[in-house]
Length: 215
Length: 215
DNA sequence: ACCTGAACACCGTTCAAGT
DNA sequence: ACCTGAACACCGTTCAAGT
Image 1 (cartoon, rainbow over the protein chains, first blue to last red):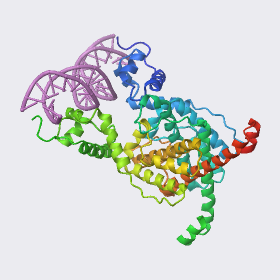
Image 2 (image 1 turned 90 degrees about the horizontal axis):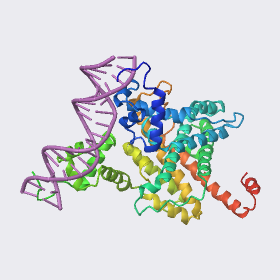
Image 3 (image 1 turned 90 degrees about the vertical axis):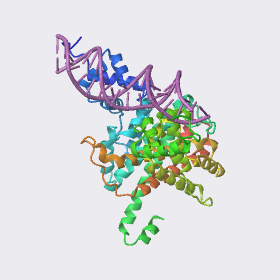
């Protein structure tokens, strides 16, 4: 067989299949020969549609985390509540695709489409420009860290760790509630930092007076 | 050449070399043939000292994150300060070995030797047993998430992301200060949660009264 | 233009053979 | 017991050859 009248390979179908296989076997478990096999096609053929394996994996991540991310938020709510809502949505989405998580540690993230919305939101609410990035970094880091943690728990049975580490006790607290408690703590901390900065800004004369102001 | 009078391969030296190579080229960049080459030995020989590649990588991670983790803490300080101090130390250690970070997302963590100390610390300070795990999960997740984020920044130049993502603005805030602000927010949040739980415990009669109590 | 089979240069790992 | 070279079963990727 050679060139058919209509292409055998559809980018979209490749990516969807790849995502399904990654969800099942993890990223390291995905081989292009397997993927091609599932599609009834030769592995080499994939290179006519994608530059390399990374582009396929990247497509799968986008499909899951961007296209697949729909959270209706109430824009009349205060920004803190909107941020909580968006983060909870993202957290749950990541929990659906735990095998994608290692990607977030390798490539640049800010994958969630809500990233820019949150930036505008903070800006509109008088959050000082210089702290917006710093704050979003911490909430984003918390999100990813918690997603990683959550993925571990679900696989804890498989790993059979050293005896040093006791089996994870049932946390006695709902995972989403746990997530939210910490997240709100972060938000409050940055609101406080903004307030402190305001005070400090007016007294930036000496280093000693700064310390006094924040104490 | 065959069996020498004294072994050619020393576990410790293998692990140290592996760590150095991982720090330089990342985990995926480490091949057993390269490692063996650096040690002046055949790759197959490594299998007389390690079960597989994972055991070597694991050893490197332990060497860096456990043996290499020394933070002097003041045990007279309140537990919150001790936790901040330990976390800052761990955060800096992870920043020294950014290439080890992907490991934390794959294997069980709690690698830092301070883990058990913190548990005892919280317990000794009357932190309710059921919330200790939940709290430490969030601070640990925050630590790892922030370490990942920090590793990204150092490599941001190399990646050359899509134009959508603007170059990371100079954060205008010291990374360690940023880390600490968020961490303290998490701690405060859990202290608050403990307090709330106390109230709720005494009024667990109806769901509606619970909502009222926490509001 | 699109797909194929074969090949290339790598892996981690195994194993019979050497001393 | 410890080390070796060769081999095995995999990779991702390239490429001439087919239509």
